Image 1 (cartoon, rainbow, N blue to C red):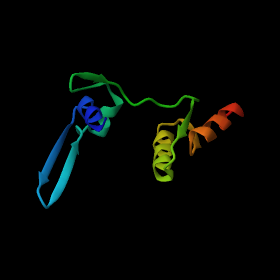
Image 2: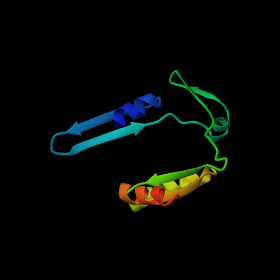
Image 3: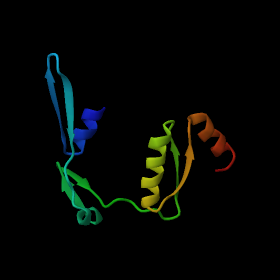
Length: 100
């Protein structure tokens, strides 16, 4: 899955392994200057558009790892979306049943 995501993003993966010393992986993504993110850009043969911005929409973030969930909420808030968060699928389902 990681390899597919990195490749579709225009990046590449490296692998180096040496007996008795261990293995290392490198994940490389293309660098995109911040000012370009506000315009359409073309990377690796795919059309990419400016990041979406919230317009009154709410996104429910379901993640069991508190650190990953917090980071996800911060990034979504940066895009001007409202957020709800749940630590698992059961809690998310309860929230949705309750009208969230």
